[in-house]
Length: 204
Image (cartoon, rainbow, N blue to C red; front, top):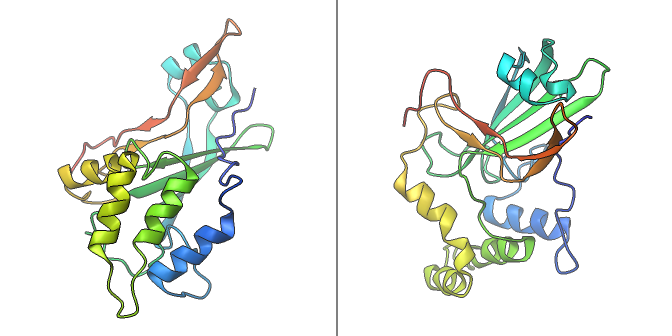
């Protein structure tokens, strides 16, 4: 069984991907050739070998014990490719593993255990509330009104406010926000979420 951690359903009947592209550009400006979300990032290459515990627990190619070529991208949230590294915002870590048969296994994580909103509609609404006015200023009252009406948008901000920004991309935890099913050696499906911990400890 190959687990591919891709979040495909990014929109619903009320939203579409172009809505997000538009609002990201309104918030961060136009930056030709850059991603609209998580624009600032750095890539790395390495490899991954599952631990013995992982091999014993799960019957999937990712945990086969073979050394797998891996590509990573660490990134800052938002559409500004020049955002300072000390900014109090989520960081992302995406990893792509090349499995023994040549197929790919992807995971995507954030440094917050919760997302900015519970669904695409509320996340888009929050971003739209944050759009600057004609003078280039955010309307704090409009943002506060939206958050009061949508309490699911509070948790990520509270987490970020309680934690110092990471010292670096490699000194922080990363959380998978989606639940996946993978098989154990008895053939049973086990619910998992990814949780990546830095080998040298957490440092803010």
